[in-house]
Amino acid sequence: MTSILLPASHEFETQDIFVNMGPQHPSTHGVFRMVLEIDGEVVRDVLPYIGYLHRGAEKLCETMDYRQGIGFMDRTEYLAAFNAELSYVMAVEALAGIDVPERAQWIRMILCELNRLSSHFMFLGAFGVDVGVLGTSFTYAFRERENIFDLFEEICGDRMMYAYFRVGGLAWEVTDNFVTRVNQVLGMARQGIADLDGLLTQNEIFQARTRGIGHIPAADAIDWGMSGPSLRASGVALDVRRDEPYLFYPQVKFDVITGTNGDVYDRYLCRLREMHESIKIVEQCLQNLQPGPIVPERMSRLLRTPPGEVYIRTEAPRGEYGVYMVSNGGNRPWRCKVRSACLSNLQALRDMTVGHYVSDAVLILGSIDIVLSEVDR
Amino acid sequence: MTSEAGAPDLSSTIWPQVDRALSGISVEPEMGVLDLIVRIPKDEVVRGLRALKRAEDLNFDYLRCLTAIDWEDQGIDVVYHLYSTTKKHNLTVKTTLPNTDLTVDTATTVWRAANWLERETAEMFGVRFNGHPDPRTLLMPEDMDDTFPLRKDHPLQDIKLIQGEGIAFPEEQE
Image 1 (cartoon, rainbow over the protein chains, first blue to last red):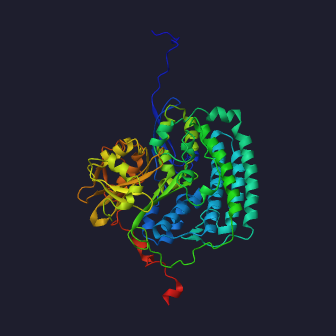
Image 2 (cartoon, each protein chain N blue to C red):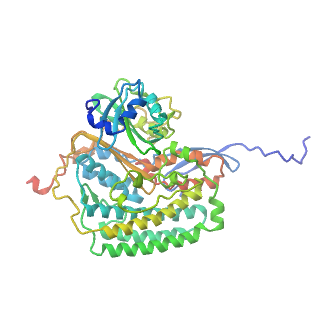
Image 3 (cartoon, rainbow over the protein chains, first blue to last red):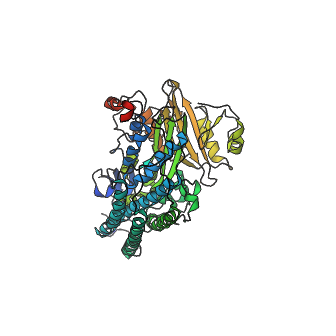
């Protein structure tokens, strides 16, 4: 008979079981499903399933006028719709050779950076809930996000699906009190970031839960095609705004925030610090904002582009949002491919999760900050 | 869609380095709106991509995007958008697949990033990527076998009804 006392080296052997998470799981941030193969509490394999939110935005764009596609772009990336619109309208402008007036470009920059703020607030709030701060971080973050959305609503009449960027410029002029309102929102956002920073960053429990898990080395992150804060947390200073500037990014000063370890904590910290950079950018934009036209003087009603193709990439909150547009000379795109940052980031999920506990899998998924409508399109 | 090989403006681009890296492979260069585009025959495309990644002066270590374009009678183009995180330059690689043989070797052996992008391209266009490590559907249901939504012949039903030539403005209708 075997002894009741087991030798110290002995580990309990457990059978691997499969646990299904999602698609209706509150911590999967949307309709994302993953099947975890677990051995006790340790994840041995991850099998992600996506596509529950696929609406065929690319196909729909092919059937409609260039200007009608803007609305679909909003819905691919609903947490940072301005950034999504920007890639799309820039692609059409590049194909058609349209010059955008300076004022419109500055306003686009302001709105995109504010949208980055609102999106990162959403991340901070949701991530706090993932870690276990219950609702506190969420309500703090949503208070700030609402302030930004109020401003967006004043400008474009909608809180999420703006369709405010148009081919050539903007839909209409911003409100008269735009500059004061933006300054007001920035002040509140600065306070909001400080609040969340104080609530989470130095918190011992928060650090114990997030440090050292979900690590991904820089070389792997590049190989998987990751981008945005998730990549920069691994120490790769890759930012489309700096490396391949668009709009007036060369004229403003900002730092590209990078992490060192590439773990969950670094990905959180990268986003938090990036928010300060966004505020810096918006402040500089406001100084440069001059009165002027917001659409080119001569814009034909029938928008046709010469045959050609362009791949436009911009730095959205979650990474590189690219639009690859092919024209055959008609009034609608022949092919409009959306390069989703989250899709590429999500590919690395398995590498990050295997070997960690089930409860950490939720955090690791949260730290990539996915938005499923962008993954599925 | 192709321009004359060796057009004078290509000397200021990364074409000389690309040409050197792809020696032995028949390549057609073309200048796009932003990036240089090269066309590689489908049998040699993965060898070419690997050479582009390994070339020290190019170092295309990042696959931005992989997709396809349906040109109806002229086959399907598979498009790779490459980027170098160290040298910061871009390149678009294209290969044309004839409608009679929609297969190409997988690029997952070059970048792992190609994995899901190829799965998506496969289910949307019916392109087969030989040697893909995980050839399941990605966004589409698993039982969706012989219908490819992003092909031009895929039906759109009612959506066509609201389409005209551009947007009809009231004053132009009168």
